[in-house]
Image (cartoon, rainbow, N blue to C red; front, side, top):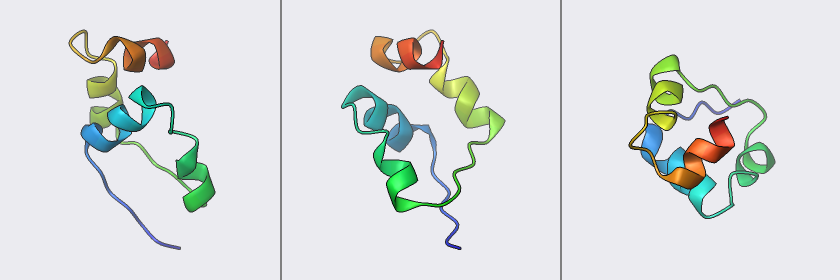
Length: 54
């Protein structure tokens, strides 16, 4: 299994361009640290990313 660690930016922009579904196609397991989830839900995150989080 390949472990991939990413900060919030790649996840955020995959959501914004409606391409987040590519991650499960590429990886068997995806883990988002709490800090990344918190940043994705931050009030200053792009509106589209916030919509997907709630």
